[in-house]
Image (cartoon, rainbow, N blue to C red; front, side, top):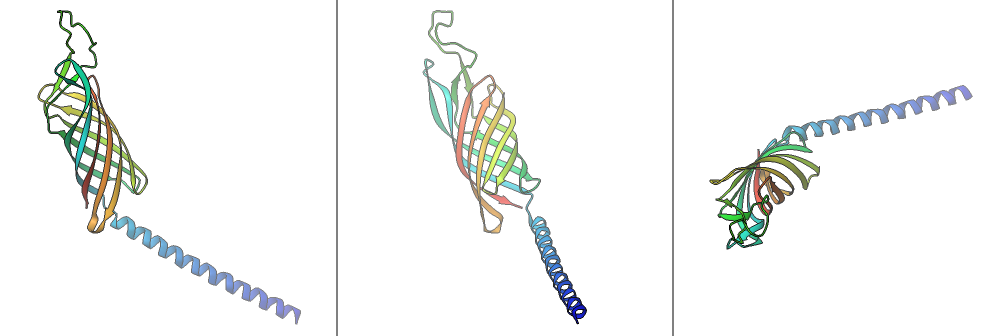
Length: 202
């Protein structure tokens, strides 16, 4: 009698364990299927445009004084997503006004000819293009770093850029985002750009 009771308990335990395993296996399969579906629907490409303000540091006024000025600018970007965390982008900005900045290699004071002038660098509607590596620790924050070139009718400079993006996803694969970047134009000047944009995923 004891043997039969023990055998019954073992059988029931085995049946319960088997049923639990089957349920977990089905759940894992469903989870895996959902994950695969997510990756299949994950958009790899993003085209975006932004309206910005760019703060130019060490801008020159009247050839004698320096100050920070804010100028309107626009951004036009293409981004390719490797996965949910990493992306590579070609980010382009244009400042739609001409301006003058202090030459970073110059010194204040007499220029050697009796003139108290500041050596300057002229910028004519400069366009910067940078390859940006983007890391997204969370869906609503992108940390960016990259290098590129700023082109102008006067002179071109190498650019090192750091920044942040804060995207918010909208229906039909649209997104709105805020952007903040800091540019170091080697041998020229530095600038801070902030703005808001709209992008399309496909």
